[in-house]
Structures are given as structure tokens and as C-alpha cells.
Length: 337
Image 1 (tube, one colour):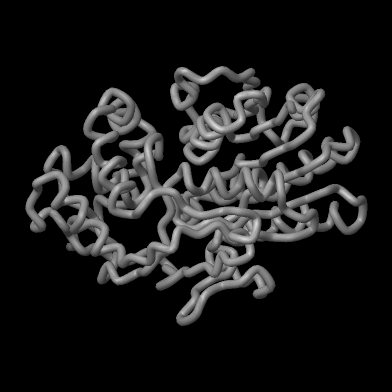
Image 2 (spheres, rainbow, N blue to C red):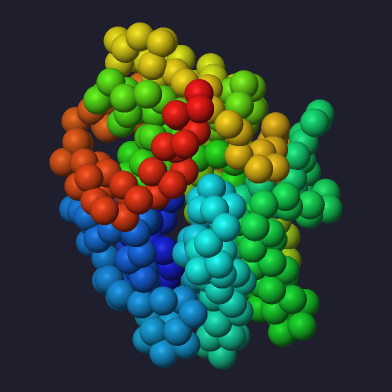
């Protein structure tokens, strides 16, 4: 089996490649990645795979990478909500370009090649804010950020290829994911790396935003099983069953690191910040899926990884691009806190 993993040098994509190497060693893996700020070849360290540097919006790069592949797993995406909200037209446009047009380019090539499965990796954020209960796959899509809207758009493009052309598309919608190799702009790695250096931890609003959290390798397992056993034309929620408030997670991180709670600084919330996401993932359990890691063990493992791999994240955090993002996103908020 030869598979294409787009965005495989990113966070969830590289954890997926790592899981496949352990669970399906007979698979031949091709990684296609543009190596944007969040994609790094180092994320594939010690893994045997063919690497193609390229953009999913480039038909020639996609054609070259997809040659001979029987399954396509599309992880490639602009994925940080904050960046989609920063008011920079170049940043906002990148979400639409990659998350929507890029899916179209992939679907076109997959249709031509007659791939056996096309797995579109999406997010629980397409459901929008969930005040009570749990999102099921038949719920309407109601995204509330440009990022979530672009992911919903990509889903709809892929689904249209299933309906119109018979492309065997399977969609997964994962909950908030964390673990090793996560770019330090997201909540958990941001708080861990700041705490290690005794820097303030900028927590949005009252910190009572509630999410279902899933360890990266568990998320990867759900995507793999959906790809292998799922029914084309269907969507599958991939949850962790770990609802936590943001402030609760930050407090646990400080406790694990032996740092004072006084490092927490409540800052101005981001625009349209959804209060809660929660997934019903009974459907994918029918494919044999169950998370393997408890939240507490996974968080402990993640914090330990960032402590040990400071070579990995300091190279990112000390770079000019990250420093510019951090300044634009948090400097004024922290000053006003």
C-alpha cells in the first residue's frame, strides 16, 4: 500500500506518519509538504518516508507526489484561528487558498488517478459553538471563524467530488489536539514554553472556554481507522472524551513544571471565541476506535517532551517570524492585562 500524506511535516501529519510507521510498517509513505512556518522536515526525524516539497495548490507538485498512491490523507492546511483573525489579508487569504482551493486540486488529481480512498482531515470547529450536548456528524456546519469556515469549505469541495464524480471521500473531524511537535502558537505548547522560561502565560478572557482534548497519536489512530474502514461519503468525529476548561489545563501545566500560578495573565479574548466544542464519537467507535492515552498521562508526556526538546522549539520561538507574530498577538494584550 502506497499512501500520500499531505501536510505530513506539520504537527498532526507528522504524528500520523509516526503512527503509520509503527502500526502499518508495510505501508510506503509519501509526504507532500510546502514547509510553511508550521511545517518542518525535523518533525519527520528517524522516519522512513519519501519527501516531496511542494504546495497542494500546485497541480504539478500534487501530480508528482500522488503517482502510484492508493490512498490520500489530506492534513495540509492553514490551521491557527488567531492568524485567520489578525486582519492581514495575506494571512486570511492563505486559509482560503490552501484549505479550499488546495482541496480542489487534490480532488482533481485523485479523481484522475482513481485513488481507492481520499481522507479529508477536518476539525470540530466546523460545527461552531456548542452550548450543550455533543456534535454528531449529521449536524449542520456553522463555522464562526475564517479558519473554521475554510475547513468547512474544504469539506464541501471534497464531498462534491464524492457526489458528482464518485471519488471515495471520507471526512474526519477531530477535537483539540496536543502532543509532541506542536508549533508553539497553540494553547498547550505556548503555555509550556512560556512557563519553562518564567514568562507570562496569556490566557484569553476568563479561561472558561471548554474543549474536548485528544492526544496526537490517538487522533492519528482515528484518522487511520476511518481511512481503512470508513464508508465513502461519510464523516467521522474523532474525539478524546476529555472535556477541560482552558484555565484548568494551564493550571495543570504549571503544576507539572513546578511553576507559580501567578504566571497566568488573563488577557483580552479573541474575536468570536467559541465557548465550547464537544464531539459525540460513537460512530467511529464502531470502526474499532478508542483513545489509548488518558489526558493526564498524555499531558505529562507532552510537557516532558517540550522540556527535553528545547532544541526543537527554541529554534522556532527565537526566529523573527515567531517573534513578530507573538508581538502582534500578545504584546498589547499583556500590557493591558
